[in-house]
Image (cartoon, rainbow, N blue to C red; front, side, top):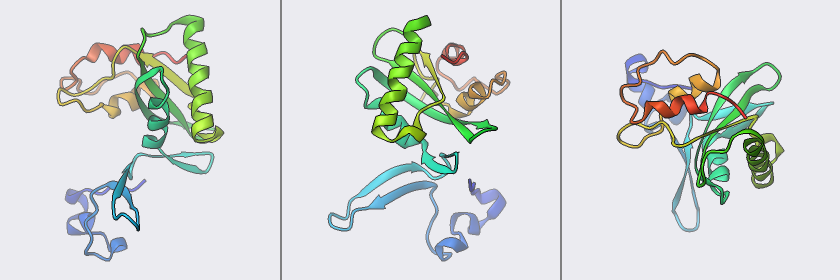
Length: 176
């Protein structure tokens, strides 16, 4: 992954040589339809997972999960994995109450099969975790840095003062 910051790279960070030094790198990916001229946003260029040598965008997996009729909202992060490089961890809020026990396993298996059908078997999340709501800032942005820590099994030592409902973070601590 390539991270650009003006502080560490100056002008070249935002206008990198790879883009001829005259195109601005905003950090978002997009494709343009040649016929219509419309752009389709593909997500952050730094939100790419490398699963067994396959590069996948988190937005693609999130969109597949969100297309399932059971799902209200989904967020996906990567977690280091000795076997495949990175494994996919999905955090899911369902339209129904949060499942537990055997019901949670059944719903998680159904969602894995759904993603496998929509994208392909390589995109199936290794872990699916359920919560009542996503941890978001007061402006409505999902706090992915916290989800990455939860996915890795780390204690949350980061500042959570910007999270609207920090209590939901603990709901995602246990994989199904």
